[in-house]
Length: 360
Image (cartoon, rainbow, N blue to C red):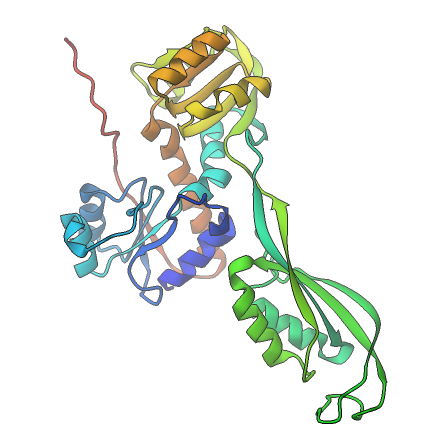
């Protein structure tokens, strides 16, 4: 397999179009055409994980957090490990806020034995809906060309389209070379209306594929940008039976100490999850009916707000709340490549939180 194949697989799991505007998910280093048979996974592309990936002779490193957040002004600012990855042709792909909206909170919920109820913040995905009209005899060839160009993919389903039979009409101009009919004469013919969805960024390539495959000299088609409800950030979830959330979450996540603010809720069932940095979701979590917000980290002012609201927030660690999702991503990729008949070695690199505690 190639690096571009893994970009496509991740895009099927968590479309890169879901990434937030400030994010930099996607290919960070390397060529899309490069070989990818040994795949390492890590939460971060640090000196340690890049060295470990190279030691294990990995072709590709998949991370959650991007290697680059801001545009580079020169290569002199690159970290030594990044330069080493470049020299060794180690490709790096990051799945950040697109994976946040699909896999991070569900993985944490699974670790904590929670049952998912729905996203904490519903998001939407911008897509383009293509509508075109084609003679019935040419419909299958046209759809095949559109699908090969990337249209018709919805989650784990491919070649998705809608068809409606009808009658089209046109009058070819005097200088035309019509596929059907003669110049100057009104022509009526059986046509199929075809509709399919595609990422907005694929409009140019799908348009070109349509023009190549369509039998008409001037095919009729248009794109309409639509919003489809997406998975959204965070998760509302519940335990089947009431639990003491502070002690239970600490035990499940292997925490030796916890930081929390607000009101200890006692035994509860309703939980809001926002792995990573989730302090801005205190009010939405409380309004949604949760009794506690479990996140990775909050700041001082978020802690004060929790006190004012009389609402509990547990900051269990950025690393600790996001690490389970990396295993989930790896398992999903393993299943997908196995179905394709590819033999890929997956390497889960050892990591630990950068935070340290010292007894005084």
